[in-house]
Length: 187
Image (cartoon, rainbow, N blue to C red):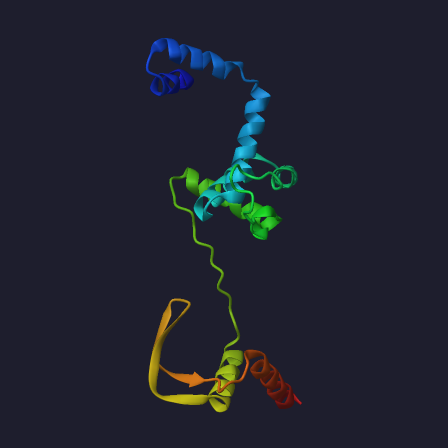
């Protein structure tokens, strides 16, 4: 039924529609299944972020994890037409247990007409560590007089914070001196 309607929409005459419909049905079912799998993996690997997540969730819901890992491994070396030099991010080529479970949950959310949930990559840092770092930076860096900035950290805006200069020091040397200061304080 759906094939007939789509064929009718794609062609101008009923004869052309019948010809297209017959051509569609002569394709082997196995070929269609493999083609669909390959296209979904290509969308997962090469699509934009939302498209990739949707394709990933469909694949995760359709396969066992190890089958999906094998399918991705087979398809990741295939280049899309006209896209020979595109580098695929490493995170898209792997499917671990956590990512697989998350993708299955995303599918259920999408099926319930929801939107793709944002990934929360925030984490908790001990308040004492933040306090120690801030006191070290305030004591070792020079203050730029008269310059303040608003800083947004994890959705919280801190207004009118002073701006400090590194004074030509590299971040690596600052980190090493911080580590030395902390290790001396612990001794």
